[in-house]
Amino acid sequence: MNGAWVVTEPGPSTAIRVWSIDLALSARQLARCDARLSPDEAARADRFLRAEDRDRFRASHAALRLILAPAFGLGGDALAFTAGPAGKPELAGALAGSLRFNLSHSGTRALVGVSPTAAIGVDVEAVRPIPDVLRIARAHFAPWETEALAALPPEALGLAFTGLWTRKEAVVKALGAGLSLPLDRFALTLPPAPPRLVAIAGDDPEAWSLHHLEPGPGTVGAAAIRAPGAAIARCALPPDWPDRPPR
Image 1 (cartoon, rainbow, N blue to C red):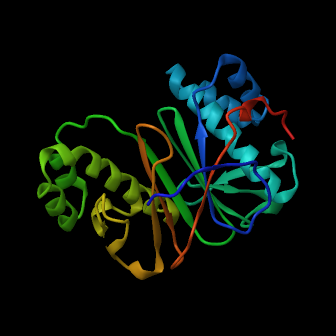
Image 2: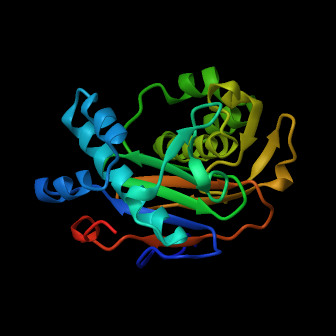
């Protein structure tokens, strides 16, 4: 069972949480999101050429501030971010290193993973037709994964590929490795099997916990935590989250 998503308010917690956020917002709600962004974030949003990419950035980064700020009893505008060595966002200033988090978005859905201590990565993808799935897998995935995909019936191939992709991206993002960790250097189980690291170069697969996620209709996702036996709480922001005044 994937587990239910519980609609709840952000707040202090010692649990590892993964938040599901609906990004299908009205123009008025997007304007509310803008009030939460830093000048740097607003400038980054304006650099997107496509309106849907710009709106997704505005909404997801506003939600990230709404989720993280209560952990410190601060307003969202008090948070400062920086990029790690491979570009992974991190808290900066006095809060540096005090909390691990990761953000992913696709289509009209975002995920935010928050962990008190262990490294965490999340990924979400909108399910859509993907041509040449096996060609992509052979070019990027580990041989074990490619063989497992090739053994599936054609009707199961697309969803299994997308689910595997999210699992691999979550691991890479947890490590903060970016492109320095090729996707063929580690192997995972394929959906519908529970997510598990089969092998990973230079690391112990038993040191990891992985979770399959279905955060919204037409989406699939994953969370990876570098801690054995790590449970997660599945949380969702209330539908009216953008209408709440900035704290």
